[in-house]
Length: 371
Image 1 (cartoon, rainbow, N blue to C red):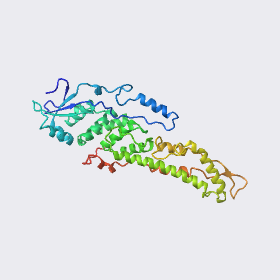
Image 2 (cartoon, rainbow, N blue to C red; image 1 turned 180 degrees about the vertical axis):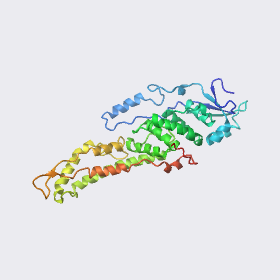
Image 3 (cartoon, rainbow, N blue to C red; image 1 turned 90 degrees about the vertical axis):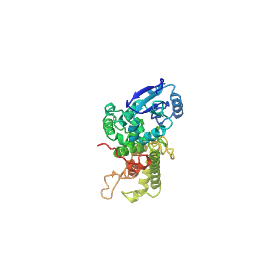
Image 4 (cartoon, rainbow, N blue to C red; image 1 turned 135 degrees about the vertical axis):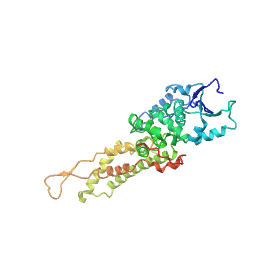
């Protein structure tokens, strides 16, 4: 019998199992805004941040969702047959409860926590094929909450069709952001759980190029750690290659550079280019002073933009044909540093979904892509 201190939600009125949903008080997908590497008041900002965001007790600032402050647990009446068929995770929990967790009415009891009640009810209605109770449009956050549960309960197949409807909606109403942000990470989760190869590659490419943190925020989502580790390593290696390329060109201009216009002008040409390059280094944060891995506070895209902004010096020389009129000297940074750094950034591509399918518990390899 349901405790009088709980509220029952009927998923199946003839159901033979009860699921009690409690709240652990955890915030879903907690995101901490990365610090700006160019800030001159880092210590002050860090101190203010710690005062404003108390993630332990959630006392001030962000208001908790209503379901997290509920004092009464929710009890869902469900069909064990539906859950066992759709979810091996539910199946193992229900089968283990048959021996020692029955009440006087012979109902099986299992407990869970951490889930949003609205998202959990959508999950259960879908598993019971109660599709008229399932909304056809969801917010990105709600879809992410459901995606976490779909992965946790290993019920990918049951969501193959309805997930296509949800994803078509968020593509229009909640398009993938182009910056490293909370919504981008939620999108990455959705592309991972529902197996969207093209959008997974696009999401990981944005993280790779836009992330300013050496350790990507996983936000407690069920994305395999190997995906984050791969992105972190590739980001660090790409920035390191840019720094090495920059240093190689400094050495080249200082020593062995040969002017492509006239070898006899190599000394003058390299001296002008070296001086212009050294003068502009202060505008490139990662180079002046030169930082080392893991490059906290720097994004690959920002470093690339700073390199592209380097101005080539403008000077004139005379060619051997017409010595009366000077012409603009062709040597500059577009065909040297900027070109080489562009190649490095272009090679920093997003990840391939199929390379990581073995990292998850989805051993069936379901493909849930949308048209």
